[in-house]
Amino acid sequence: MAVDILLGLQWGDEGKGKIVDVLTQNYQTIARFQGGPNAGHTLEFDGHKFVLHTIPSGIFHKGVKNIVGNGVVIDPIIFKQEIEKLEKHDKDVTQRLFISRKAHLILPTHRFLDAASEASKGKKKIGSTLKGIGPTYMDKTGRNGIRVGEIELETFRDKYNQLKAKHDQLIKLHEFDYDVTESEKNWFEAIAYLKTLNLIDSEEYFHQGLRENESILAEGAQGTLLDIDFGTYPFVTSSTTTSAGACTGLGIGPNQIKNVFGIFKAYVTRVGSGPFPTELFDENGVHMSKVGNEFGATTGRPRRCGWLDLPALKYAINVNGVTELMMMKADVLSGLDEIKVCTHYMYRGKKIDYLPYTIDEANLSPVYETLPGWKEDLMQMKTKDNFPKTFVDYLNYIEEKTETPIKIVSVGPDRAQTIFWKD
Ligand code: GDP
Ligand code: IMO
Ligand code: MG
Picture (spheres, helix red, strand yellow):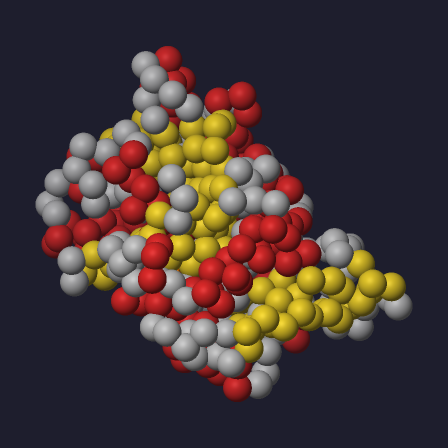
């Protein structure tokens, strides 16, 4: 068997958690490969609703192993709280949860550094989730970070004190007020708890699994347009959210990867700052926000909404090597008379159909094609046969423009509201 990857093609919140949960029945292992508690992956089934931040979205399936890979950054406090919530639903969750010793730890001072850095940027702030993600990845690449495996060693306290002292100096430079006492106490309690969980040499786990023909699904967090290299820099996150990140974030070779599932909303959302060419400020945007309930699963902030952006989608498909698409939240567009799709950009006076270096308003504006909408409530659809023709035309149009098949259409937040469009 091989590794499949599922990842977001836009600015995150495409519905990754829901679809990983739906697909878990086909896999023996689900593995998160990057990001941390900046993610919020929502799952709904049998009247329950859960938001996962660090834990992979296959956790509700008994008999399936869930791995937090080396590419992930873990805040032990949030991680412990997350597990405790899940344990109320199923007391055995930790038995199927495994954590890479090479994953990096988010310290309380990383969170303060994140806040201090954002405050110092003023209007130019990234709109970070303030979970300490950027500073933790900076310490990782700066070779100062503390990894999960360190908590099993005697040197752990010294390493912590050294890194904290370094952070204290940096935060002072920002003239930022903070008191770490309370969160430090909680953090060490959470570290003691983390020590009781299954800590593993995860790359070895994957190598052995692949030798034994295990099926593995790698779950991405954030989205392609938030990737540290290929996103709308500097308004991005600090990890590799694209398919290459699954190799470095799990320790597997590119020749082990088979399918790359690219997931996108039938429109586009973005939370936080940064350019968004198709953003809407009219009643259509309000419709998407209201009907789609577009509020961040981690921070509760309202998500900005806009029309589907084909040059950006094609770019994301190419950067990731997407083999199959999954279209989410098509139900939200029901009731609109017309649906617009951005097919090109006007970029410094020229019409182009790719994503250029800068996509800010001053350089670029979207060119739209208008398609007819549909009135029918898609949430009630159980099979492919009853969808309105104008919806099918919209879907076929996207497939044709992206030259990539759409395999799944999602028509509601529940696990059951999922249509397998193609075998
Ligand atoms: P993720 O970060 O990619 O896992 O996505 P989020 O959980 O942050 O955001 C997706 C939101 O849309 C969640 O509230 C989901 O419950 C919801 N959702 C997922 N798929 C659909 C869908 O097809 N239709 C509707 N209406 N909601 C959906
Ligand atoms: P999921 O996995 C949407 C955004 C933040 C901010 C930028 C940098 O649920 O799709 P960070 O805290 O990472 O330094 O913030 O990235 N962001 C997300 N937006 N979904 C996410 O995750 C996100 N994770 C980070 O809003 O603009
Ligand atoms: Mg989310």
